[in-house]
Amino acid sequence: MKPRVLVVDDDEQNRALLSEKLLLDGYDVEKATNGLEALAKVSSFLPDLVLLDVMMPVMDGYEALRRLKSDEATRYIPVIILTGRTEIDDKVHGLEAGAEDYINKPYSLTEVSARVKSLLSMRALQTRLRETEKMAALGEMVDGIAHEVRNPLTAIGGMARRLFEGETSPQHKLYAKNIIRSVERLERMLLRIDEYKSILTTTLSRGNLNDVIEAAVKDIREFIEGREREVTIRTNLMQRPPAINMDYGNLKIAIFNILQNSVEAIEKNGEISIESFPAMDQAIVVKIVDNGCGIGNEDIRKIFNPFQTSKIEGAGLGLTICYRIIQDHGGEIEVESEKGKGTTVTLRFHPAR
Ligand SMILES: Nc1ncnc2c1ncn2[C@@H]1O[C@H](COP(=O)(O)OP(=O)(O)OP(=O)(O)O)[C@@H](O)[C@H]1O
Ligand SMILES: [Mg+2]
Image (cartoon, rainbow, N blue to C red; front, top):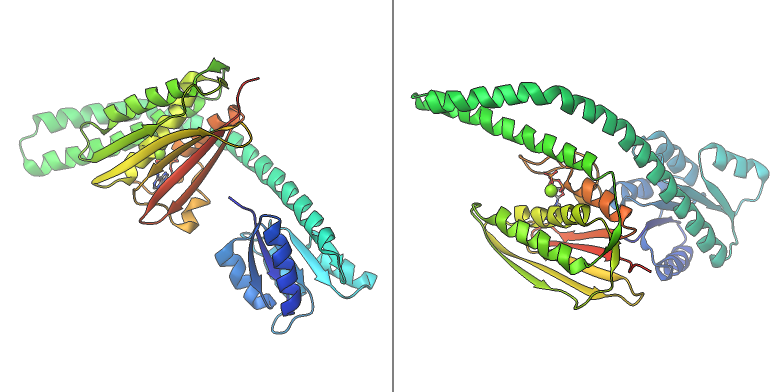
């Protein structure tokens, strides 16, 4: 996904020049004409960085900055203040209010572009670090809970199944069925937690991507059987792809999880296509496209987070697992989706040397 930059300036020409340059640099750009509008755009556009003019009508840059930095949800978005004022006091004022950087007008677009690039890469590193720490702490806690839950859950499930089989009252049978269903949901959660733990060790060796894809497709066909869905799967794989360094088992889990999401996104009947082809930079691209329910803009940013799920029976760990596996392969994963239309997951792998 392209990084998003919000340009806030009351001067139309400045806005146009800045956004043109940033678009050329490959960012998604939105514009606002004053502080108040900027705050509204921050909530809807969710920028990765804000370029903020100071002297503006309605609400000036300092006030907008103060509000951004006092809200937990927007505090970590880096802000670069743009201003015509040059006095030291004003710079200090901006930095004290929490701006990450400060650029004086008149500025060169090349300078703005360089500072945006550097702040964005710093933010990406910080985000990754925060996530790694969060994951490690979370991992330990989840592991502990899973351990404690396993035995009582087996007992509850076992008893409920016996009740279900021995009961004659339809009402009581229904109660037992509901307990069993809830137990199954928790069992899926535990299974995913085990899966997550198991993929943390990776052993890479040279292998053929087509073999893994074909094995995952075979498994997904079995998964589809017995479900009331008509799903057509089409594959169009690049012939004799260059070898990549892979952990066969883990990579199969990753691709299976992506396909499983596609199947689950298809309510009655639909189509999944898997194709692979070489990219300009020698990478091998694998595209998995479905015409399922799609994902809304708000949700798509969170889908790799653990326990993020929209499904009653979901654990919300499938894509967290995928992300980790693809990272361990030195690859990349990207998800694009349109609600009601479908989803495309793109994977990129680099050939083994
Ligand atoms: N192909 C897809 N189409 C529509 N929504 C999707 C797709 N892939 C992922 N999602 C959304 O992303 C969420 C997270 O996916 P993820 O695989 O991590 O968890 P899950 O499928 O809910 O549970 P599980 O851990 O059992 O896989 C899903 O709940 C779903 O809302
Ligand atoms: Mg899933």
